[in-house]
Image 1 (cartoon, each protein chain N blue to C red):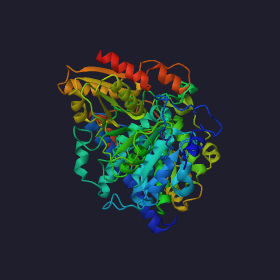
Image 2 (image 1 turned 135 degrees about the vertical axis):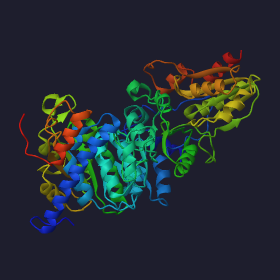
Image 3 (image 1 turned 60 degrees about the horizontal axis):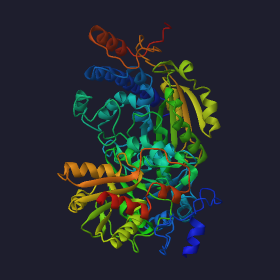
Image 4 (image 1 turned 180 degrees about the vertical axis):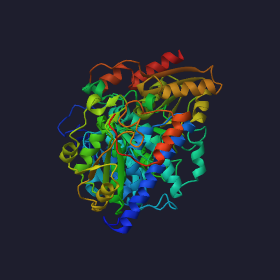
Length: 340
Length: 290
């Protein structure tokens, strides 16, 4: 698949005719990295060729999340439940109780908020291998508005016992997460962007849930980023380096369980910044704050960067990222102020 | 195979099921006293259905609770679990002595059933409205795996106010999940009173039929009728799903509880306990209008 095909095929909203989300998020303005396709359906179809436990469900969003790529190759293991997210998640739990590994995918706002109780009661509590896939997370749906934003999902789901919460970074990371999830015990929430997340990993990384990945070493500041914020954080680190700062960057892809070793290592630089496309309340930043204090790193200079506790204004995604300083220049600016 | 009506085997079966339904009721009363509270009335309405499922209709092997080809049962009205536990213990899924610590600290047996702790429990429940979706998932998985097991799901009538029930009903009809058998324990009351007053659920036959279900309506305390309805349905996994509307009486078997809004949760103590046990020992009596 060429990059050109990727952009035309992938980012077309729910019905195929919506180009409103095509304004690729700009990072440093000179980004020539490949735009990865949303590989969800394709990767699962490949995996399902060799694993008959895999089944995919969606709630009338097979085009948006590319479950169509799975459905074409494994029609007998694909179920579209219509616009009924709670039903979808509990059906997936029933399937998991009978030996399947279901991936139930819908917009993360509806998966995590509407389906919250089903995730807790039907997936996490019975310790079933359901993979709830929340895509178009954060505020990546831009001017679709608060109903379609998922800024609370991390905060809500982090408080559910026996649920593994993973933020996917880019296409290759998604491949790694999907592959690894087949051997993972218990329920998972996989938080995806909108399928056009700029590349971080040139190849499929070797990952372990609960183990963050250090992408850059540095001694002045550590930035712990997750999901869609990893790429702009790396770009911000390069800007800061030009300023003479030495910045360590970690991809904290697993929010729960949190990698306490990574937090300890981060504290070693004396200053820690967390970056997430989520409400700052109870997300990655709060988890890191808890770990810093309880780990004896209370003297660390620390800031949670994310979306403040408010409903975001109307605007295209890139404009919203700029507004909240969640793009590379914004993150660099926040980091400079923290270190000033 | 369920024996035909008017055969000696059938008469014997109905007699034994009547005894097991009585066992469900007396054990419910006994266990409730251990807990200090219990869902008597919701369990009494389902006693004949539960007994018939586990002692006759379902293809199960208590020695192999995870047997892949077993029929499944999802108690969507999880608050009736107190009537399910004695059956599972009686069949040998677990040591009946565990019943004596029902709901006590560290027990595997709570007011609502936990599939990870209780052998024979096919799905955890307690939050109303989920069970039909879970059953649909189990049934769909069975179809994907080429297995011919059935999945039975018992819903309460008050539970039908939960929207997710109808999401599942719509999807089961649409996907023609013929290995799914639902049943509504139509015991007429929810917590705050009669469903007709709190939230109307009728016409149930028409409602489920319009969602693509093959609906049968029976007297849910008539063991012959229950046996008939369980035996006239095939295992075609792509046919219409079956819904059984079982007209029942909440609290059936204990006169003071029958159709009473005051016994959703209760606690019998002292002479009341002994009186109710004696009444249950006499078997179901013709209902006396209050």
